[in-house]
Image (cartoon, rainbow over all chains, first blue to last red; front, side):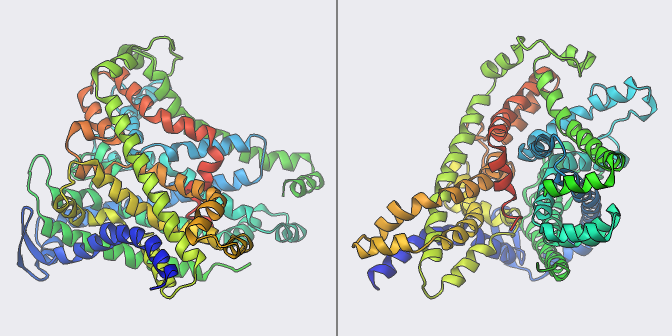
Length: 301
Length: 287
């Protein structure tokens, strides 16, 4: 090998080793783990597809899997509106460069840099049935009947956590969309002004199609994020997805199955790995479809 | 853009302009209030006693009343968590930027067989949710005997940060002109010397972007310490916060001060460097 070859090898090998050892190898192993029976940390016999069969078709795992998956779907669609939809509107408002736009831009992104754990505890305190600011405010304006234990009942718990997530992350799609809008060439905008006065036509026919690349990215990231959701429900709903599994999501369910929870203490790497593989394949497939379908409608300028 | 927009409004008349932009302005102001209110309530509550928080959660506190902070300082492991977060984040960032620049420099600056394949290898890690590989990672850390050791976190964060860093830096390094490099080579400078003295000073802007993109998720991460670290003295800030919040459940003044103290470093840095933060954190999503 020449000196130049050695030099390139020396540059490339250490980073490559890190990625191979701590990303590629664990992900490949995760697939292999799912086909074995596990006794605690010890690998037992090869069991074929049995772990997959158990988490998909054997009670009580079957209902847990379905319940968690259903909640993830709700989370995804709710955030699609509350995070990405609102983000688009906010981006459009910021794009006009009205007075104070710079300040508004900094404010909308501020919660994004906070640790999710801080956001989770902060909203948990806000939602407190007696002393939380949400219920204190409702009582203060005479809406006593609306004050309720937000995180304590099945009907409101998941939605309360979704609201906290939307507050936390709405700044991200906002600024990605804003960057997309700012790249629309001014000649196009000038041409539109000649054609129509309607703001609605301008948004639906020009701005929305032209920010398609931004939409592709925020939709895909939201999808991956929603099906990996863990920190907020873990802190606000607990590892069991309280109350009564109403805040249980695949991330919590997977973690609980793999590492056990406080009450049951049962841990099963085989079933956990099977869940991880199923979630992984699902995310990869759907994210792939979303990306290719959305890419197709992107317009090259 | 803004000049053109102004002309447009002149033609449409003042009323229509006020109507539409007025609505957008109201949306922005309402949103900013919603974004800031929780943070302001958090900071205000940090200076109140628990009864004061229950009685008047929105009142402006007496900012000289710092008993809650004193309590955190003297009674909890908070400073330890903070220090641990600095150590883990700092070490990870040094490794990410060093290794990321090395790989990106090799891929971006030299033509060699397999360079595209190696770039693809790095990029494959870009979107894979590593959380789902936590069981094999746990076993790997156990085999390396670094469970309950901050090295486990530093190694995982480094590996997670490399794909984005290589992606950002390779694009930037490719775009640098060849002339300086060729001139130096003509003068007999070694490859290492060219990289260190000539090229590296030029890639600093890309390093800042890549650095910010990685530093925020690493500083804020909770999942990997949850699995890898049990020893209270080794916990990072987000993980330590869960211990701390569990101990003081009824002392809301202390809880809010703990949250405020944890949020303070990143909020202050963000306000100072908001432009770089926004550019850095959205750089993966904005082409």
